[in-house]
Image: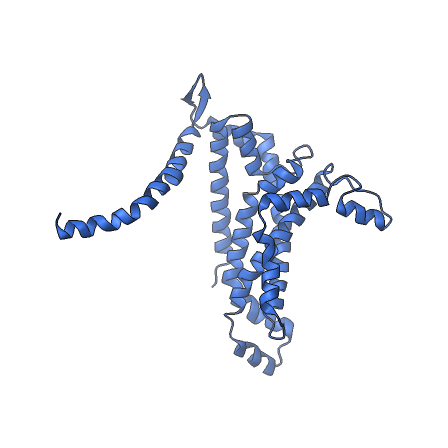
Length: 288
C-alpha cells in the first residue's frame, strides 16, 4: 500500500469506532423516528398517514395539558433556581470565605446523586401519610397532614422543590466560573468612586456573568422541557394529569399505548419548541 494511501486511511480507522456508534445510535434513530412520525402502525406494518399524527398531537387535550404543566413548572422553577444559584455563587466567590473547596463540593453534591434515588427520597419526604418527613414536621408544629400527591398545585410544588434542590448547586458552580473571570480591580475602582454593593452587583457582576448566566438559564429551560423521571417516579403525572409533562406524555403514548407514530411526531414538536425557546433566549439576552 502506498504511503499516501496509508496516511488517508489511518485517520479514518481511528475515527471508525466513533462513527459507527454515532451513526447507529444517533443518526439512524433520528431518521427512523422522523420517518415513522408520518406513519401509523396497522396490521403489522407502518402505513403512511401524512401529517395526521402532528395534527392529532397539537389538538390532543392531554398534550396541551402536558404543555401547560411543563411551562408552569418552568416559569416558577427556573427563576427561583437561577436567583438562588446567583446568591450561592456570590457567597462561594467571597474573598472572606474559608474552606472554599469544601463548600463548593457541598453545593455541587446533589447533582452527583442519580435521578431515580433522589426522586424516591423526595417521594418519601412528601408522602401523604403521617409518617412522611414533611407531614411529621407539620404535625410536630401542630398542623394537620397535607395530601401532597392528591392536589395538583401541591404536587407541582413537590416537583419544583426537588428540581431546585438538585440543580441549584450545579448552576451555582457554572455562575461561579463567570464571577471568577471578573477582575477584582473593577470592584476596587467602583468602591473608590462611592458605588454601593448593590450598584456594583448590577453594574459589574451581572454584566460580567451574563454569558454564563445565559448558558445556565438555557440549560435549565431545556432540562425542564425534557422533564420526565421526577414526575414519573414522584407523582406519576397525577393527580388527574396535574403534573403530566411533555416527555411523560410522549412516553405514555409510545411505550404504554404503543402509538409510535404519534409519539415520534410529539418528540419533533418538542424539539422545535426547544429550538425556538433557545433562539428567543439568545436574541433577548444578546448584547448591544
